[in-house]
Image (cartoon, protein in one colour):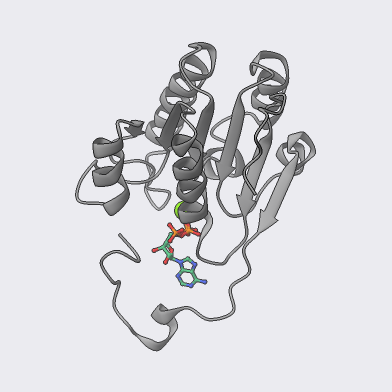
Length: 180
Ligand code: ATP
Ligand code: MG
């Protein structure tokens, strides 16, 4: 039930992790809920390639949501570790700037567990920075598989998506509006 009084704001660190599908879409569902209440939202996607015909980027454009996709993102099969590391640092610098900007009430760092898991960013440094710099009333939502202990410690809310069935397992193709 919607509350009639505005409750006091306490920023949460939220983590959607696990091997099941739904982490990014759950994050975007939360963005939609927050946006409906006039919260200013920002999404930074660490993996998604270009700002192309993804349904969510098309929606974000219409909703006026700040949105960053980090170009080609990571290619963790690539031999070019220096490039992956540089890309991760670029994304993290952008995230820091957005967190400090005062322009957002909810920031989503989509697929942010990967640069931490792959060691392109130092987990301790990142988590310590978040602990000391995140405005206390700002919500921060991280998605990605293989969450790291330090990040889980920092989080107030963690949900693990568990894969039970996925249409790819039976050879079904990606469906528009469901996958992209
Ligand atoms: P979504 O963006 O649909 O919410 P997600 O963020 O939970 O998914 P990711 O781990 O980011 O999932 O993976 C992205 C891609 O991997 C998606 O195309 C998704 O359908 C696919 N995927 C996710 N879980 C599985 C699974 N258990 N088996 C096969 N493919 C999967
Ligand atoms: Mg995802």
